[in-house]
Length: 519
Image: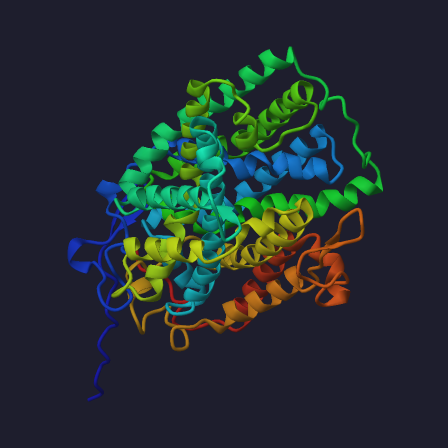
């Protein structure tokens, strides 16, 4: 008599409510690839609303770095209309992958590094997670230096020369280093209290920053007696070939500004009450906020040129010209809140989860946040802000190209291959459907290599008006014949990796991973 093989173990029954998935309490994953911070958020704790996501984007978009985006484009020769158009279009484009990758958050309650396991493998997910974490650490350092500089400059107006003229240490007054440490410590105090504290902070930070920005506009308009000087400046590029040569790499740079969030947005959408909350909140919050904020920065800078005879694009430097202590104090708090809101949400939450994914048993969310904060101290991010060419073309363009490559793989895997169906338990299990070959999916690695080479292989340094090289790459590109693609790095990386991954998975499928998910 022939023995009958036992049936394969069935997937634990899952509770599904409004399209959202939850594992029963007795099936909660454990083991070396799970910890409390990486586990799916229970349905009862998924309660972020449309307002929460809108406030999140308002809080993240209203910061010193995004304020100065328009100034970088104007410095490259655009007029204000061209600059605002470029920023608006970039944010509409980047919203699309953001909504596509964000879908997995409300449905499964999982953070970005766990979501990436489906495509890259349980262990392979550390590759995109570490890339994302490295970018976040750099941004954390940039924003922390900006915040600390804001404290230093505005506090100097309150306390006088004893503060701003303090003794030098490492090229800066010791009071500026103290300001940097104070701002660094404030962020840590908020983030170690967990995601619920982050949600509450973003809720009240968003309207506060809007009030502060509008107050700055009203103040400068009163002093200027109206706007017009900067708004009347013609484009140095026109609308011909000169404009388009700058427009496309600048567009990719503007997309690169938020391409980080297009990957790790599940870190936030996993707390959504439903799909509509994240869809409406992000659609309303991101493109409208960034466009209006860019326009606001142009108007305020126009007023500054009328009043002071020069365009002051840095809102901290402009706020320092306020001539009463109450106004300076309000400006100081506004700058602090604005920079805190983006740095905590965009540059601390993500790497905290990403680093936790490397060693779930040893690194918690809070430990990951502390590591991020530490790494942000040991870099020199202010050099990236030294010129608009290096900032927009080199930094944002290169980062955007790599992150676009990862986004293409995730979108192809989740939407085209799996049709949004994931085995929630197996995302945490060695030997499961997402284990592939020793925890790595070689298809994703090959697709990443193809997309990455095409996206940034031709990366090159721009030349300023004096012919000085701006950036670390060769002027002719790393791989010269790929130089024409470098100006479209994000789009090239996303499209190439998406196509490569889709074809590899279709023609050389992994048998276990391709099995239908039991519902």
